[in-house]
Image (spheres, rainbow, N blue to C red):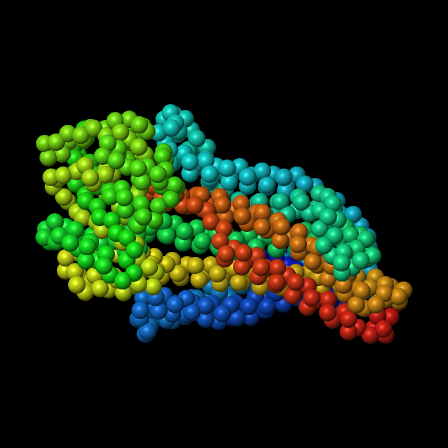
Length: 603
């Protein structure tokens, strides 16, 4: 947002000073020096900064109160529990920051304009066709650095997850090399977006020629003029693309991060609950699990149920084993093949009294592989099983599984049970009623967990909700800044080409045709920016979300990168904003009078 704000401020200064060239020329003709003009323009920037700082503080207070109120609502509180104040220090910081940004954005333009000669400032400004020399060296370096940094981020994630796969010296060397590039992480997205935008849009005009074909149905024979006009000032087109790419990339980063976190939360809750409803109880309560299962199975909406027992056994050390009803567990549990490292869901359906399913943790610790045999000892008994599958976890036993092995309950008798589990498959509309019945009648003996309830609790976590709301507000600012920036750039393009537009009208072009031509230029450049923003934004979101894997490295549940419907909404919003912005700028051209056009032509 700061980068976009500075860019917008710079564009505003350029437009402001371009419109006031004659005013500056008159001041110089009356004796004003370069220093006087420069001081005057910086004084204006200082004044604008103070006003912007106060306005920014007011908006910031409103946004903060909105986020604060949302957090309180999620906590269930209707009254403010903390005083909300704005200190003089906050006011000072706001104004100082705004003044610094304003001066930074205006300095270069003010310095250039103040050095204009009187004749240069007073003469009518006429645009000229010119090929701006472009040197891609810096942009190539930026893109390469960004890609290497992204690669290092992914590498350090993989290395940290599987350190055992590397020799110690190799591991340390790779980690150190990756750490060097990690220092560039905050700058990498800007390097990639700015460098790639300039490289793609300024190294060759071909991309505009290809994209401009989308305007053919509207412009018809004027498409060739459009292509020529865009080539005349590739720097301006590149700036538009860069603005759009930055905003869209940030929006995609926010949406993908949120969707990925929601998906991860769903997987964690699924691992903990396992089915629509999960019931836990301990032998100390004296409850008869079979009788409980029979009673609950008769409730309306209950489609299937499966019970499980947890006990411990000796396998060169103490491990926990869970019994599984092979005929019913797979019907009630929310299973998928992503939970299996070797084998698949069919291993559960065909689990017999001689087969066993083990976790990845157990297999690594004991050096076991698929189809190996495992001997377990419990209650003075000994049994040999063949490993039929290796899993990350099974639903209902936790993301960090409480059980290390899973066997068919038919072959297990006379064990000292540590804990009982009962999993229920319930119709959606009856889930809440079923859970309430169990809590009312067995609440003192069992613990009841409902998948939908637990998922809602995680989604309504106040901290997560506030952060997501804040990021959405930031994206809103980014979109507004981008829209304003595009409008200013297009307005600048129109002002610089007044005489050209006048000549077109005098030679027979209608105001509608001129408006269509300018609009076509805006849409073409905006579409290129959208494509760049989609590519760079998706790549940035993917890499940074892979880096977030480090926060869940100890969990068997992978934090997948998800491009959900919110990402689609953000892209559609960006497209709509760009179309509306370009229309708002060009529509006034249709209302111009011939007399005004002739004055433009005369300078």
